[in-house]
Amino acid sequence: MDAEAGRKPLVIAIDGPAAAGKGTIAARLAEHFGLPHLDTGLLYRAIGRIMADRGFDVDNEEIAAAIAENLDPDDLRDPRLRGHEAGELASRVAVHRNVRAALVRFQREFAGRPPGAVLDGRDIGTVICPDATVKIFVTASAEERARRRTDELRAKGRDIDYSRILAEIRSRDERDSSRATAPLKAAEDAATLDTSELDREAAFAEAVAIVLRVAGQAAQTAAVRRA
Image (tube, rainbow, N blue to C red; front, top):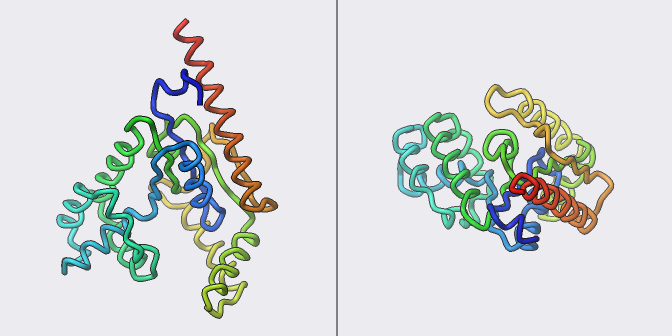
C-alpha cells in the first residue's frame, strides 16, 4: 500500500453469510497485506469454552461479561472452538447484553491498532467498523454454499444430505438477516464479491483487487483534503 494509505490503520471489513468463503478470503488478505486477522465468529465460542473449562455456569451474565472484558486474542487459537459443543455454548453466551458490549469494544480496539487489521463476521462493516477503509460483502448462492458445506462435511467422513444442508443455510440466512440486533446485510459502501462461480484463487485475486482499488481511492481523497 502507498504511504498515504499508511497514515492511518488499514481496516478491512469482510462480511457475508455462512459458507460464502469470507473466512478464507479474510485470512489470506491478512497474510497478503501483513495485517492481523480476527475471525469474530470465534469470540462468543471462546467465552463459552472458557466458562465451561473453568466450571462456570454459561448462563451467568456477570461472569461471562467479566471474561469478555479480559478476552485475549490467544484465547481464539483453541482448536475446540470450531466444534459443535463450542457452538452450543456460544448460543447461550450470546444472549447476554453486557457480553456483546464488551466484545464490540474488543473488536474495535483490535481494528484500531496500527497498522490495521482484517475482521470477518456479519456486522463488521455496518456496526463494528462503519469507518473501515475497505468493506467487502462476500456472498454466493444458497445452492453453491450448500454444495460447499456438504462437500466439506463428506470429506470429513460424515454422511450428510445436500437438501438438509440447503434448508439449514436458507433458514440461517433468514434468521441472520431479520434479527433485530445487527442484522446481516451489506454496508451501503461495501463492494460485493459473489464467489458462486469463482474458485478460491479467483475469489482471492478479486478481493485483493478490491482492497487495492478502494484503499487507493481513500488515500487520494485524504491527500486532497490535506492539500
